[in-house]
Image 1 (cartoon, rainbow, N blue to C red):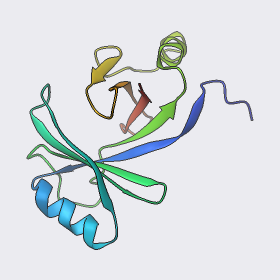
Image 2 (image 1 turned 45 degrees about the horizontal axis):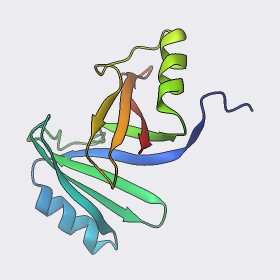
Image 3 (image 1 turned 90 degrees about the vertical axis):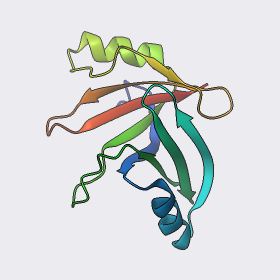
Amino acid sequence: MENKYGIVGVAHIGLPTNDLQKTVEFYKSLGFEVIMQSYNEKAGEKVAFLQIKNYCIETFENGQAAMADGAYQHVALDVEDIESMYQKICNEKYTVITDGIEELPFWENGVRFFMIKGPNEERIEFCQKL
């Protein structure tokens, strides 16, 4: 099957929390390590990235966690070229739910991303680490 969008893998799963420290400690007890902690100024949220082998969780304290089954908020897919991906998504009329391509100062050089709605109202993020 052709990879016409340049998706190279799953970047992370987004998990909202009402208590970041409790969530971090829980996943650390399972063997995850904290690979980055930050503060998202735009959203006003503390953020932590936890990883074990090739599985990464982005957990962010937003005070609105569902505290129920289905609590994951989004899946993020790594892409090679965020600009090209955005153009393809727009040309094919997917529903973009961010203000175009956005940027956050995560990782060493930042990250650029945008999100679309999936067929079940799920959020799908496309991101490129800079």
